Each structure stands twice: as C-alpha cells, then as structure tokens.
Amino acid sequence: QAREDEKTPTRRPLIAVAGDCAESAYLFRPNKHSECPDPSTSYRLMVEIKCGATVGSIAVGYDDFLSVEQESGYAKLYIPCFEKDKIMVFALGNGDDGYGSDDEDW
Figure 1 (cartoon, rainbow, N blue to C red):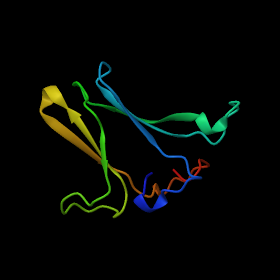
Figure 2 (tube, one colour):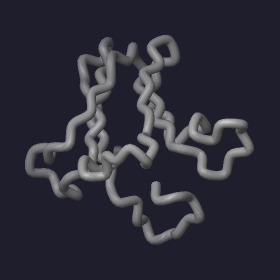
Figure 3 (cartoon, rainbow, N blue to C red):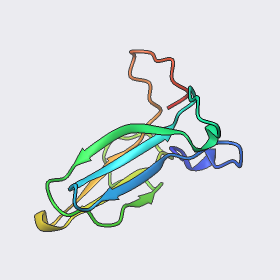
C-alpha cells in the first residue's frame, strides 16, 4: 500500500516488480476501469524506473528516510542497481500534484 495504515482486505495493493534483464523496476496500480472478467486482477503500469543496471529484489519500508523533507507514513521503494553500486530510493506520497485526476486515489 502507498501508506502503511491503508492495509485493508478490501483495498488492492500496488505491485512492485524487478525486471532484471530489462534493467528497470516497475510499479503497477489497480485498474479501476477494467473490462476484465475478474477486475480484481486488472492492473496497469504506474511507472517504469530505468536503472541502467541489473535490478535486485525491491524492498519496501515505511520509515522516514533520513532527514529529507517527505510525507510521513508513505512507502519508500528501495531498488538495488548492482553494476552501478547504488540503491535508488523512491518515496510515495499523497499524489496531490495539483493537476487533478479521475483515477482512483493513486
């Protein structure tokens, strides 16, 4: 879930996938507007994170990351990029970017 306190049996989670050979990580969100026979299995790509290196297993944490300004309680994605000797960290937030959207609350 984007927020740790949103873990409920009725709310579908975001799905993070590491794509080793693609040198990318992917984050999928539930697709509310699906014509799939089982809409609970319908997801769509939210973001592709291009790492330019072999991607290891993605870790998720909810603690604040250092003293950087951020929205507390939201998930942080830790994406290892092996050949670059780096771990990329992405913080989710409330999604309020001022542009508005008809998507469900992602």
